[in-house]
Length: 573
Image (tube, rainbow, N blue to C red):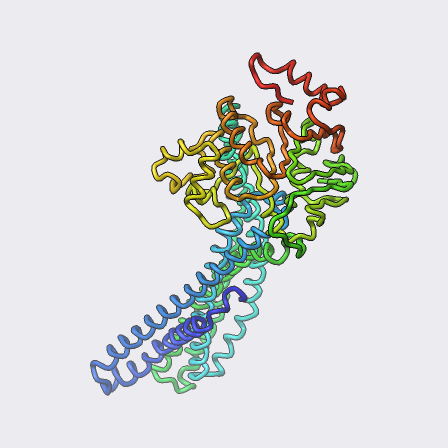
């Protein structure tokens, strides 16, 4: 109720409307008594009285139901909006381990669809509970007013109905949770095949993926059928119990009608009100399914808020760092102490404005080392210092404002080109244009339909690989951070694209502390220092000439790269 309890006036209006609508139910049965006793038998009622009463009653009921439904719809949608915003904010601030535990499809499903499903089901159930609950109470009060002794028999129904609802609700809740898990797995298969559509087609794996999808879809269908059985069985069983009890009451009422002094109108009104109990009882029994499904759907969203911890951070801030970086005996274990370490006791110092390239075999820890600085990876041991302050003691937003990154995997948002360049900052159109020019992308941007206001689409797939890399460089130029992280920024590019990217990178690196992870010799040989990594440790470091003279691991990697490079091609370590 924290998320849906803020709008008190809408709650008051909704419940008041439901209460008024409920009161009109017994009044329909109550009108039969004067109609039969005074209208048909004695002719004492004016001809217009009953039609006018019926029209007035239905008008009041209709207005009350509209007000109640509108108010509760407002509560549901406004509460859902608040909950979604908090979930999205928590997602953006969540510890990074969350994204390795849960898939993107599962998280998006929780934030977007399950919150909406849960909120709508629960509020609709509340609307039904308030309407039918008040109706049931109003009818029972009217029956007590007519004959309280006879009405006590209705109390026999309560234990039987309660047991049925409890038994089926537990099963339905468990099936709903299993259904959510199956839905996540099915959505993940779709997500994988959308992202890997080229590879799937290249390997003719469509049939295998269809079988995989069909198997999970069958499991989901089986759970859905079981849920339907549990949900559908509740209503007829409840109706049978209610019908048995109400039938007994009707028989007793008929038997005692003469002794109780009922008039024809009073007897018909009592029986009618008694039979009118079946509809709200049936609808209340139906509430078990939406309540159970709604609670299960919201539970995962609320767990994301309550159980997922935000990233830890300190309080240190700096307007702009000089760019001195130091690692002191840093180790990183991704899986556990028994597994091989991604980094093993690395100590390294990088001076402000220095360009340092990291090379080594795959899995040697180069990317892990770079990701330690903005705290995308946390160290298992040791310290990482930026301008003499441990990165764990920095305020995260301020720490990350000191870094710009250009990586092999360029990520663009479905927004305008200008918004992607100025990501996280106000858009200065002249500055965006200057950064695009410096990134060797101006000619292409001029050819776009709306220039820098062109929407790039999903991850800017309309751009080539080289254009996407240069757009990432324009983004880094716009950020103007003092420390630059380049992670395979020129890999998988053709010669012409690489030349344009390299020119843009040279402009970007000026006056900045730069850490370069690369394999291509042209990218690393002009660095101030080259650090050679092997099995999570620093094997060698020095300039290109010094390392070649050392005739160690770097020299062997260089010799192998030259030997296997295609004729006229660029050697790649």
